[in-house]
Image (cartoon, rainbow, N blue to C red):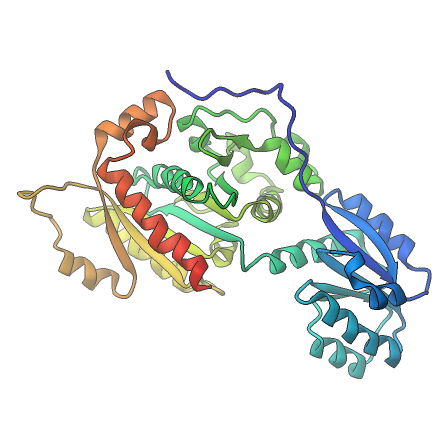
Length: 393
């Protein structure tokens, strides 16, 4: 088998830590904030005073600004206007004692990202930092869910091929791509690519708070085509008490690392699925050209449309379609347009020879035949839907 080799002995490149600029207003409360930043593992703290930040803002290039105001005066709130102007769209978190209505309205007008009341709680403060980064990167970070309408429809194959296509298209711009296998019952992405996880999840299943970007660096498997794989086979995890929290924390950490993340979402019901599908940029429902599979796809589309914050980009890929001049489709396209309504759908041609060889060799389909009809359609879909969605945003 011509499978990719895992070099478990090679040193990993350390993950970049985001810079948190803590601006001290002279109330001696910044020491505690510096210590909290250090405990997160994902962030590094820089400290400055209000005076220095105003007089020399270019001395820092923060990812987040935390302004410690204690009990803010009107003058300090006015200073915030200058700080906001100096750092543009960098998210600002205010830490202070309780605020009255007038002060809170002032903060809202200045479009701060969050307000944390003293005394600070580590978990809440860390969550605020994470959401700050996530919001700041939303113009450049995209998450795409791929989900089969039913078992065997081919969603995992589509997810792998899409991650491969994205990585090749974004190679020149050096934008990173991740493929996150959320089907923990089988770990199919890792199996199909012959990339087995070198680190298990035991340490974070019982302690989800340990998940950070350093942990993400340890669990990712680098594929030769440039994308990073996260895939685990842990059947007990599906029903684990901490499964919900672990999945969402992993998603937060992984999606902050990559410009594009493909999620291979299982077709069966899990308690975190709706939260995941509500937060992604695009959803691709994969089905086959038969009545039961299409019915499952329609049910899934209704569920997705009913979600709070449902993604605007939802598409259907009808997989394993027979092609040829004399091939007559069992279900006419006019009938499909009637069934799917406003939801766009596309046909993926059947290519058993290419996909079977890819499975046997543990490689992506493009390694077998980069010019196959299947590969051409996947590349077209990635360019016209996943990458075009980013431009539109």
